[in-house]
Amino acid sequence: MPLDYYKILGVLDDAEDIVIKAAYRALSQRYHPDKWSGNKKDAEEKVRELNEAYSVLSDPLKRSQYDSKRNKNEYSEDKLDDVDNLFSSLDEDWGIAIQYNKQLVYLYNNLYKLSAPLAITFKLILLESKSFDGASNLAVRLEGDYLLRYFGSNLEIQKFAKELICSGMKDAAKELNKVIGVLGNGIDSYNVIKKLTAKFGILYNKSTAAKQKYGVWVRFLSILSRKKASENVSHEDSNTNSHTYLNSDSDLYNNDNSNIPWFVLKSDSDADNGIIFFYILLFLFSLFILSLLLSLH
Image 1 (cartoon, one colour):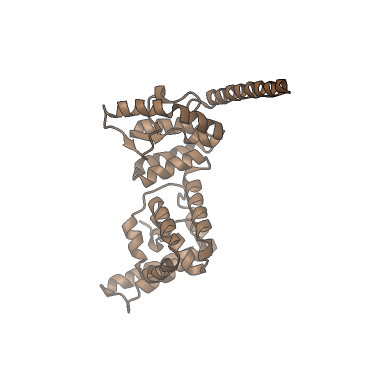
Image 2: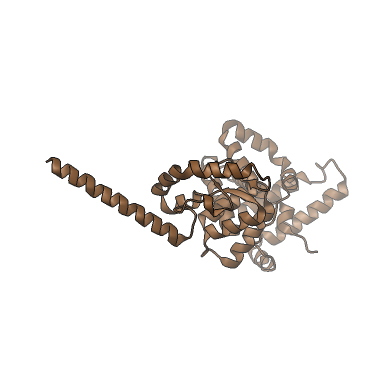
């Protein structure tokens, strides 16, 4: 089996040149025979692999040829401990950095929940570039690029994917990755999430997609219906333990459409009709207030 050069360097396979270089330098120091406390032959073999990986990935042409033989957009579970242990040599420098910028810990941990190599990439770029004042923007960019690459541009699908991964439901995340690979971005996110939650027995926050799509008015309507929906879910959940929760929201996406408000989770056309109806009522109410004000004059 050919070597996986990206895993050897402990980075994602869309890693920037600065990350490739920083990872290679850190790992070369870690496994240098003069510094390695373990078996010298193991260290020499590891250094040989590192040199081979770096010689390919640092050369644009060789890297392009290597990448053409791989499926770069197939999501796979990271072995967190293995990746994290690779870069223990960075701990001293990183320890100094977080002493003077506590936000780095929060940003790093958030990325680590999503992907260990993603968090390592964040650490490597900051330590290499010294651009700590841009840490927040870097974390947002790395997370956005990661979710876009594996799960497309639909924001609700990205959010769902993130919660799947962070909740440890990697099989469901892999399935979602395959679905997006086949269907692309032009999908009905409601329907995709509904089918996946049913298949894997997941309870998921059901109003997020509608809130993102239709804005503040759906948020208002969701609040009005939340109590009833929550009571129905709580009653059903007392009779079954077959579901997995992605979060602790009381407003859950379950697999029974009877608990889903008509204006939140049905088809796009139904939701559109509901929003139009709401705006008509709002317009009529506005006319009433306006006529009342005019009559007072």
